Image (cartoon, rainbow, N blue to C red):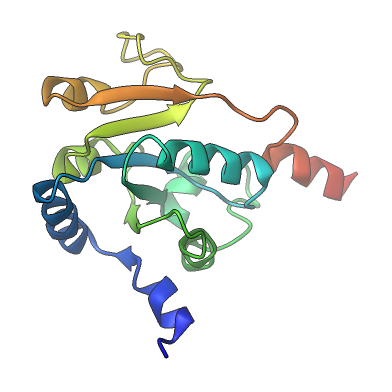
Length: 172
């Protein structure tokens, strides 16, 4: 019998391993979906979004912000609530998540270019048609994915769910 925790933890990989794994999947014809985020306190909105993203292809890869990159986003002094390893293990426990790769930059641009996903997914608060790199609706990495024959999609969000609103309720 396989140790289930080891299986979950094996989904959390470095960029080199991710690149090699994704390449082998693509050579077999699998469509790789990439998304990214902090996923600090996992909630129904996250799970719904990730499940819908995973349904767009055969494999789901998550670029997960490191703790330092979350802090640099200015989400608040108390963020992230959960450290990067804890967030990664929770995400890896989802059956439809295939790989998790950390990134420490402000955006996942370099990671996207390295991994070359077939499909780039973001929430519907972003716009796949937006071309202004300075717009909050611009999907980082979209130009690269499109130039390489991939597609960029926006997944509808579940209203009423956000880490910020959960934290507000807790502080209530």
